[in-house]
Length: 276
Image 1 (spheres, helix red, strand yellow):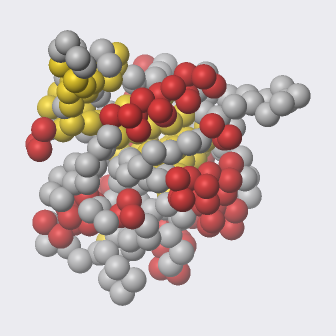
Image 2: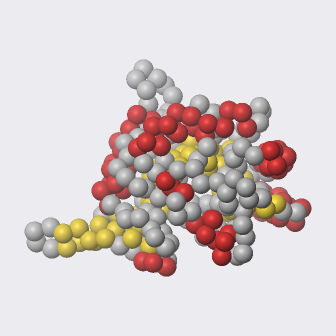
């Protein structure tokens, strides 16, 4: 859960603590809760204690920052894969404050804070924002897109992004991708990540859902990243072709899931342009 993250769209993963509460359909088969339970943990649920870490763990991003500065290359840090930074619990207040202090201390790292609780951004983000915070929210279906995206965009950030993973239905985010009429500002959403569900009990994907998001992003000039999908054939009157397939730069995971798959022969792994 640290250096050399297996998540294709980040360089590192940092968890200031472990544990959360399931809040929406995207959480039903939560991989983090499953992983925690597999290791003998019990950190999920409103009555479960969160797992906290010592100084050695908290010093890892400082080391990544020094390496990034030495290389002259910014690095992305996903925070947090095993928690939600914006969960409202009194015992994590001091740890969240420590996290924001660490973010300010590591300017060569871009911190990707992904939440299913954007309603808490306004009261939990520090009053003085650093330029290395990317804010994202999970939108697994249209209902949660409609509710969460406006809350996300109300909080300023270097990048606003959507995690449409697991994607559980057709989603139209056009209203939040295109530049407003008569406005000189860039598109409100800078980046869209999509992907299927994986693991035991994974719910089915639909390649047309991915195609729709791809086309919406292309129309608005917004970066699109298809993180994972299962192999799928599209049948025509004459032949069957791979709508989702593995190729150069992708790899297969357990359960037939392809990381960085090709969609209609093209691999979509774009990153946003960062405004500073």
